[in-house]
Length: 338
Image (cartoon, rainbow, N blue to C red):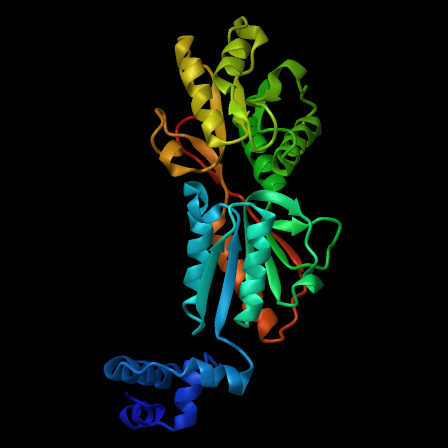
């Protein structure tokens, strides 16, 4: 079995330099780091993690706790962002999916403590508040796509849902639309409330009326058990005479937007000539495949994952972070539906 001394001899550096590279320590030149990493690969050297844990009191492993994120197609980029950032830090990742159950989550936390996990990224499928007390787990943690209810001292990275819908509404108004409807997500969801508030605020700033009959939910049923009803809702709205219906619709997500396109087509209306439609999420299985392709607001899942990992690594390095709870921009992606 190859040892650290063998790697040092192959790379032409000291044992200490090899150890620093393996541990992901800073202030090592790129040239030296590459030489050591090449020697490690050539010799198939496996670091003694147990010895490192004793020496540094760190495992070199970061934990990722998810509810159903890792099995949700439109948020897989969140995990990819985390993995891409952590892969450059010389540390490993252990991902645990709780399926949204408290019992399973408690088991995961216990396992992470037993294995002396250095830090945790706690990710949720959709933007929401959670009951979280960092002192209860005694592991440095950054919340991802969620935040601690009633606290502003728990590090978190979130999408700026308000800003995203604000930009989309302003875009439609700038394009000449004054009669704008909004088909929302379940109002119980935080993102739905933030996006609707942004829509209403922008409309008021431009002295435009918000028609109550044009603002309604595209889902029915309780949170977590909703079923989509956007097609029927939009068809009813667009069945009104020309001057009594909106010329543009904002959608709570891309699935609602897709159903809105179908409803418009069923009435013989053309998108965007007769009705402009804007989605939210940029779920590309929908947004790039509708006809016309969907103008939508992108949720920056990949960037959220990257930034959350950066935040955790900074915490572990003892670096101060001025912005405890960060909200990342949700940019408008212009295609052909609006």
